Image (tube, rainbow, N blue to C red; front, side, top):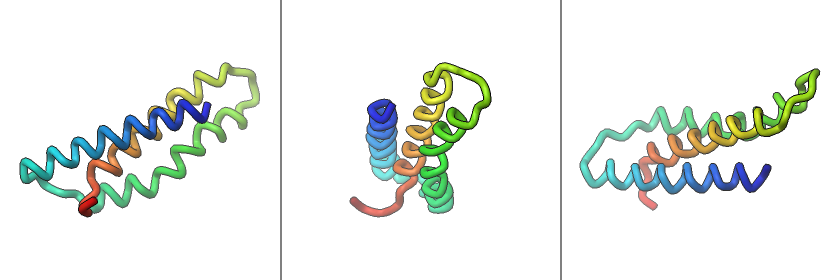
Length: 88
């Protein structure tokens, strides 16, 4: 499942950086608080799927837990990279 998390991370990072460049080019508003809040949730999103999957007392297919967790991680990385205020 690590390739799934890496794919979600790559898509979220690239899409967020593209949105950041579009926002900077158009002179949009920057949100520093949203960036720091989303950055704090990154470790939670990467471990939440594993904790839920391993903590369930009944058998469930791993895809039912890890696919939404990967999408949540990619979305969190997207928000983090799109609200970044620094120059790269």
